[in-house]
Amino acid sequence: MKTLRVIPLDPNFTKSTEYGRKHGKDSLGLGTRLEFGDSELFFTSEIKKTEATALGNFLVKAGLSKAGFHTVQLDKKNGKFLCRTSLNVEQIKKAEKTAVEFFQSFVSKTAAYFSISVFKGAPVEVHLW
Image 1 (cartoon, rainbow, N blue to C red):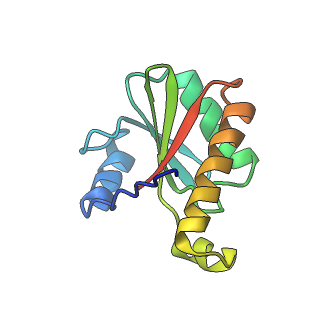
Image 2 (image 1 turned 90 degrees about the horizontal axis):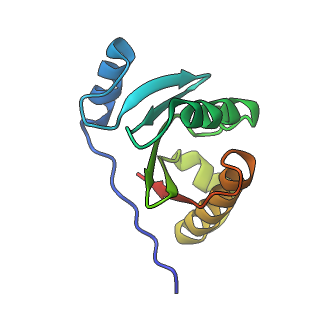
């Protein structure tokens, strides 16, 4: 059985992203900040700017920046891309599934989508804040 780990959003997160808008990075260690449409993407020192830009451009092109991917962090550990994002509660309500079903479906489909469409088949994990 797969387990799903949902990390609660830090209450300082909004303060951090406001700082990021002014200074190009955040105060909580999320990484360097870039803007893409309605989304902001943070990337760590493990990520090349070209990789972050590829994901950001894909979010806009695929319409995902308007569909709930408003804040995304991209990292890499052991050769695997780690994409962290939060979801809008309205997305879950529209899905007509239980929260666990929705999260499991969302995470697995999004990881496969990013792997194929952005990262040339490299392994990807999606984590929800």
